[in-house]
Image (tube, rainbow, N blue to C red):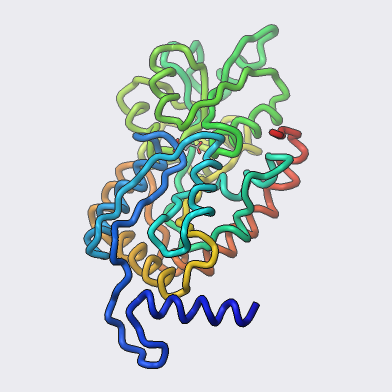
Length: 328
Ligand code: ASP
């Protein structure tokens, strides 16, 4: 193991154009474009974050950093793509909280985030809002709860696939309310908005990075923010706790991952570039418009990210096991 690490470290130095003992950076990484794998649909909340970072990291790294949407299976297909990629730093996964919940949702998890991916840094903690179609006969969370609980109610709830953030929220909601709802899976929450505006989807939980503009111009309705405080962007929308659902609190954290075994100097360069992007005024302003903010520099590091990933896997496992939703 120690020998393996030493070989990886030397390989990393060589990739960076460093002589193992010289300590002089000549900067051969990156020497080719970098792809951010977005495991959900184009135009959705994860995609929006990736595009903002891609532009800023392109400025910082001097090579193009572009996103590619590799969708399906609740984001696990995109994660598997990165886990199986060459550990050379040219494929980054932008994963949300689902990276920590997926291992508890599959009887045979498609990949292991702790052994097949290496963390680069946390990006942004994004609030979720519980939203519904604009003609739904409820305007507040208590009215929505009454509507969901009416006898013989036929309600559908959309999510972005088993293991996604919206699936986590839908699972929590259904297990708290104990009322039947038909879950409908999409490849991301961008297509959910289209279906909701057409009146074919009743409710969903989505990150503000996607849903907020739709709520602000009245194309869909917001019933609650799943955060401890109300959102400044939606001052009239209550929190879940205020509206009678204190158990439904969830914030969607995001992080960058590379394939396990990527040399440490490369991870450090990517992490440094992430921190530069998070300080970029264009990113800060766009995040603010979407009711979120960059993680502080001390959290945009491989160590802080790894610690959160581990604690979140531990935190969600019993909750999801109790909710009893599994895929084979
Ligand atoms: N909001 C999605 C999720 O539930 C992700 C996306 O569409 O970007 O994880």
